[in-house]
Length: 348
Image (tube, rainbow, N blue to C red; front, side):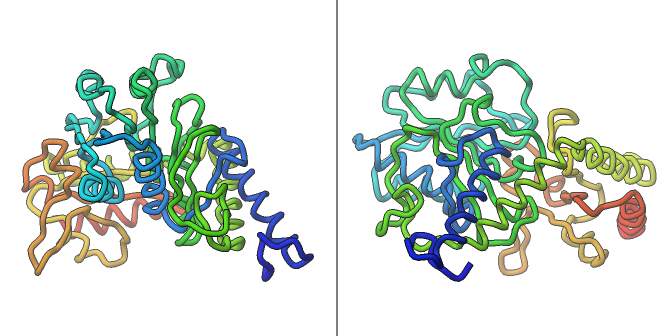
């Protein structure tokens, strides 16, 4: 893979073929076409290309971007920059206790100046036809594009860009076992974006610079493995492990374990709970054999609650008690028992 995939000499043939194959693999995972996949170095860069690319390409004075309060900082911080540098208007919609935006609030926020709606993908959506889904028809009615940061969803649940009706969708490699430093943006055929990097015309002219064929190939392989696991029922296996962990915690810490978010229509691999009487970061510090997170931030020794949980209406104490526990590809029932035992002991 030493050669430049953009070169015409023989050394470029292998990496060029690897790039194309990786595009096909990523596209197959999300129901897209290979030429609609643009490789980037991170999900944050893919989000930047989607948001800034849309706003600048629209060429409108004071274009409006609509998003939601629970988005990743890659979305929210980019929106702030778009306000500062391009005069964009940004509407950040609140979410309910289930983490979802009220469709009526989205409809009320839409206007002729709206150029982009960006809502994350994580919870499992219903199976209604695409025409019945709220964000896409609303965006289409106003001539706006629809972007979905699906970093947490792709590879965990079935994601189909046609069924979702999205114009832009972010895929992140390390969220599905590819190396860090590789991601992709699905760009629907015909969508015009301003490039995120200017220069030699690589990646449909949207991201100049010599492609990292090795990392792209790794992402393609990860996408292929994820597609096979989805077909083999991996989501159901993970959901069973997740529910077993939740049951064990609730049984041995009666009345103290509270599920954050909905009990249905959620990712199969994620359990977010708050345990009364203990701070999340202190609980995880007491069980170093478990790799998990709290979502809270630490500034000068003071912990602040997860902005996502706060946006969902959780009070400070419950948000600071939250831990996010995620079984994965190599997790076993024995691992769940070990984790539950350690957490229960520390919490007790």
